[in-house]
Amino acid sequence: MPPPERVRLPTGTPGLDWMITDDGSRTLWDQEVRETYHSGCGAVAESLGVYLLNSGVANRLRAGKATSVLEYGLGTATAFLLTASVADFAQVPLRYAALENVFLPAEVFESLQLVKSLSDRATQTAGGAEARPEHEFDWDCLNSVGTLLHGLTAARRHLPRDPEPGEYVFELGDYVTLTVQIGDARDFRCDSPSASALAPLDAIYFDAFSPDTSPELWTREVFEQAFGALRAGGTLTSYCVKSAVRRTLRDVGFDVRRVPGPVGGKREVLLAVK
Ligand SMILES: C[S@@+](CC[C@H](N)C(=O)[O-])C[C@H]1O[C@@H](n2cnc3c(N)ncnc32)[C@H](O)[C@@H]1O
Image (cartoon, rainbow, N blue to C red):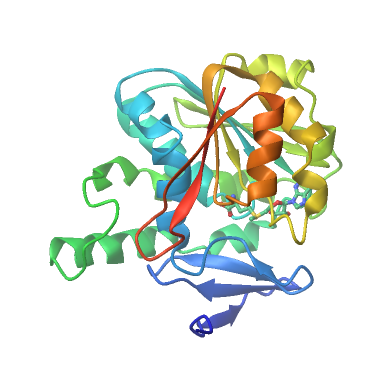
């Protein structure tokens, strides 16, 4: 069956369109890569299920444990904003670093409309209109998303449109430090000062474009660095469960599992434990 047609809207940034996903949240369609930044089934559902919940990060934060996360591919910052909001709600320090070669312009963050999609979804859930995969998730944890997004947008506005490669650190509120490492994620080294600043690293959100379009990021070399950076017991989560990817992760030492994906989305997603 062909995938459903989804609404697309211009972003004002060449090469990128907004796409409205099935849970009402927005993702981007990259015209050149011909891929979306999230599953069309739900950008928030995927970020929450595949990353915050499966990684154990949401539970850690809600249990009051300071947490450190590394993301491959900041993109729209949806995964970051949801994670940061849980930290803010729990009043727990979060160190979050993201590897990204294209730091999106402020206008894109400004029109993400994440708060609107969260409140629409909360209304739907409250009305019992739909059974959601994250129905047991405490949506109040996401109350700071708007403030955090505002802070990120303002900070991004102070940078040039195409910032030089390097490390950019943003303090967002009392608990959250975001470090955006602009450059090629293949250059990340587990023995670098940037990696040491994250130690002990609790979780990696591996959210690169797919192995078909970005094969260079799904390699043994990249996963070895990821493995080296994580603490024992730390997790690497991803939407991709391709057998070649699982095999490579196993080869570098991860215990690799397939776990259920968000309802309405992929049947299985990936959880790899060091
Ligand atoms: C699937 S999207 C990430 C979506 C993101 N997690 C979000 O919540 O919006 C993949 C991201 O990887 C970035 N990317 C692609 N190739 C890269 C590379 N070699 N190094 C660093 N970032 C890369 C893209 O610019 C894009 O933002």
